[in-house]
Length: 381
Image (cartoon, rainbow, N blue to C red; front, top):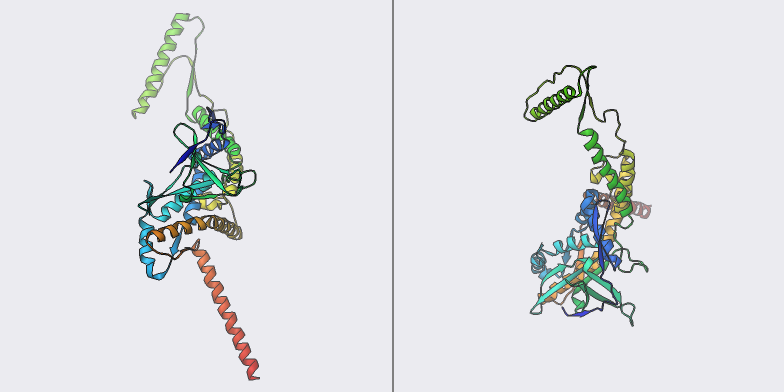
């Protein structure tokens, strides 16, 4: 690819490090880098977000590219064996990586690699390194820039080799927005709760003892110090022997008190606030809670409605991927010397949809049979 360097006056590249809520991210002159790094960090520290996005990808990316029957077998073989960077092979692998990047960053950029005029592979670019701007003289024409090792943006000349799409773009954010937008603040609170839970269990859950020796009247300070040291030594020996499986009793003479540190304290119940925060996270993903292993009470009717909502969300993601995958499939056909175009056939999202479709066809056939029977009866009369 040919690049054109963008001057420092046009794009700021000053970066500083920051740390908050257990997340380490980079703040740069370009706010997109800050957001994309933060969203990736959220997936690393909150397994529920990572699991939700992975489930969306697996539910969406089940498809097949179809062309003329005479060349379908060769076309299927080419789609199955096309390299996807160093990550794997097949157009399905590319779709998984492309959608994963799209959901996390709000935009996804793929690049087709050619050798000798034929397509030899595809890669998915890191969205944090790609910036897209509108042409000064043509507002509907995109200009792509890629960040190099020095942090400078260089224009990508061969834009016809790029595959690009955005998630939920707005006039304010034409480059798309992440599905995780709005969650950093909530995630920050949730992480603080988890951190406090860990600290409380370090203090209270890990049992520690307070051994108090009260010297008798008339004993000298030196003798009291010797007895305290002896008590401390024997207590330490007794605690150490427990690690080796040996139980020793602690016997002492005098006024000695033993109690558990923090036994009178109660750990704050975090079930309600944690669930409230998780509800916000899951509502953003559109995943039914039971799919993430959360045993929240729900009726059969509610589960059906949640599944219908998820289906509509997945259909939206498929509409975004369809033009990208069909364009890639057409390029593969051209590399095989074919002139026809392909189209994508999506699999039904789950078995329940197939059952409902079959039931609808059965009801339609029965209705047509009844209508035909009524028509024949009317003619006879």
